[in-house]
Amino acid sequence: MSVPQSILNKIPKSGRRKIKVRRNYQYAGYLYILPWLIGLLIFQLYPFISSLYYSFTDYNMVSAPKWVGLDNYHKIFTEDPDFYQSLKVTGIYVLLAVPVKLAFALFVAMLLSAKLRAINFFRTVYYLPSILGGSVAISVLWRFLFMKEGVVNSLLARVHLGPVDWLGSPDIALYTLGLLTVWQFGSSMVLFLAGIQQIPNDLYEAGSIDGASRFSMFFRITVPMLTPIVLFNLVMQMVNAFQEFTGAFVITHGGPMKSTYLYALKLYEEAFTFFKMGYASALSWILFLIIMAVTAVIFKSSGGWVHYEDGGK
Image 1 (cartoon, rainbow, N blue to C red):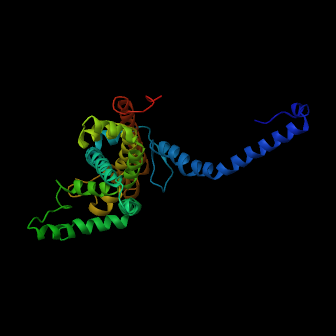
Image 2: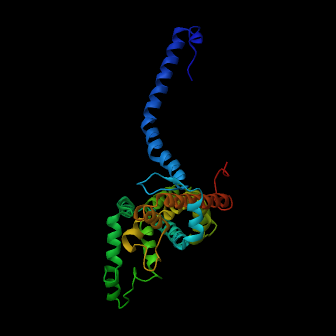
């Protein structure tokens, strides 16, 4: 906040110099955050508000948007069976992929918390899948691995099993896509690993003196101490899973029989295949509200299962 000139005149020279320096620091601070602020306004806030407006319009990117009120939302809920199918598939996908991914990340973090030689090398190797991510190239690789004549079935054939129609069976295809998400466990694993290393060793020594087994110490010490990280990972991975797109688009195209028709894929088709941008905007806002509701439920329930050392204060 600027100081009026009449007040500045009453301040000694040394004080005025300090105020000037402080003001220059403030201007420098504003200058530093200016690129971020511009990016926020142009690439996040403007599209966010625009999509809300377009969700109440009929807009095809060629002609001017035409205001239709709640028609898009009414059609989604009453005339679009694919909406419910994509919602159902996405719900199953989230319930399947997120817990398995977190459990696997915790398991690997426990292994990598051991004090072994070259442990940093193994930590780097296990983090590599997350660097590669769910890119198009990895999705193509996944398709070659799990196609009927792919590497996985070739390995199964060596032990006289299979072949399994990983991507062609409506009963299995969604689980195969889920494995692609589980494979990208690195970021969750790193957080679990950091949390494990912060657990005081005194707790394990006390448990050992009391005769507790490793299994008991894991569930009575390790897991409760990691619950804040579990909460963070759960929310982040849940949000990512609701927005999963690349695997379903590249590997299965939503098939077979729409068994992998994820919500983000439907949203993409409405926007960029049928050019119904208003309808797609309405779909995106419904997804946003669903994610907000699920996140709120998770945070509301966290009071009963998340343990904070300071009692959550």
